[in-house]
Amino acid sequence: MKCFNHTSVDAIAICKNCTKGLCQECATDTGVGVACKGKCESDVALLNVVFRQSTKAYQNASKTYLQFSIWMAVIGFGMLIFSLFW
Image 1 (cartoon, rainbow, N blue to C red):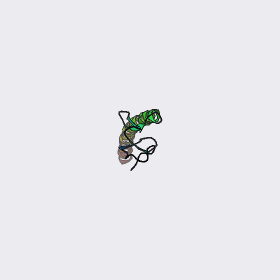
Image 2: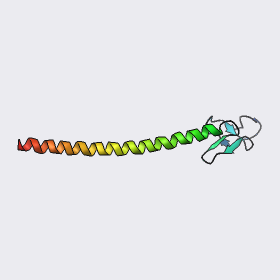
Image 3: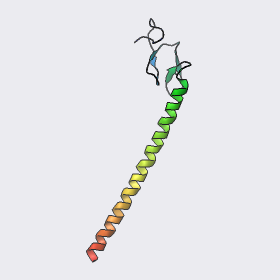
Image 4: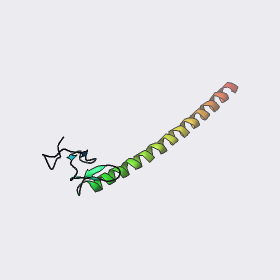
């Protein structure tokens, strides 16, 4: 693959935001992905914030679903016991 901006130079990375091939001159490492130098750096930073927030939301949701399931099992067991003694 060739660089999007320099068609005669081989690409060494792909921008995490716009998915364009980038050469050494056009790419910048943001620490969490490669971005177009001067163009997509802030967008890649925002993408990583969204990824972190969605991971936290997923973890919180899974805990909530587990708690809900336990409560439903306890209520169901209570109803079963109640119906047996009624």
